[in-house]
Amino acid sequence: MATTKQALGAYGEALAARHLIQGGMVLLDHNWRCPAGELDLVLRHGEVLVFCEVKTRRGLGQGTPLEAVGAQKLARLRRLAAQWIAAHGVHAPQVRIDLVGVLAPRGAAATIEHVAGVG
Image 1: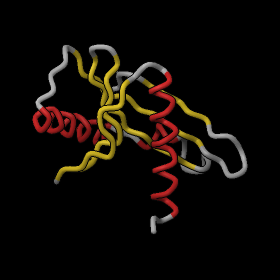
Image 2: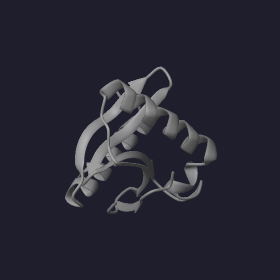
Image 3: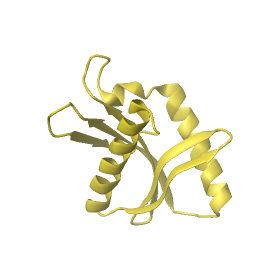
Image 4: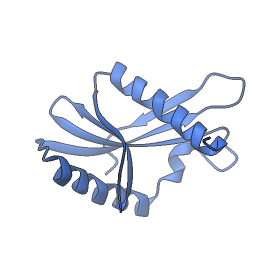
């Protein structure tokens, strides 16, 4: 059984994926893992290959979900993106890293914030 934190993360990723797909993106991969870590979502937006990190929180007690992604995490996402590209042989004219923050308070509708091209 998944822990509460894992269940919340999976819920946020599902909401984020649906939001991005409704915005015109095509989901290529999700929860891709390698020894160096995990990519939450890999999508295509036109000719752009998008690697998306999703952060989900119940409240703002520790800041917004997007505040959880710092310089070290972005550097790791860039390395993971390069490994995904190498593993899948996918080439695109442009590659970008996006962040999606999901705020999912108990008993209220979730809100989604998408920031494109952070790294």
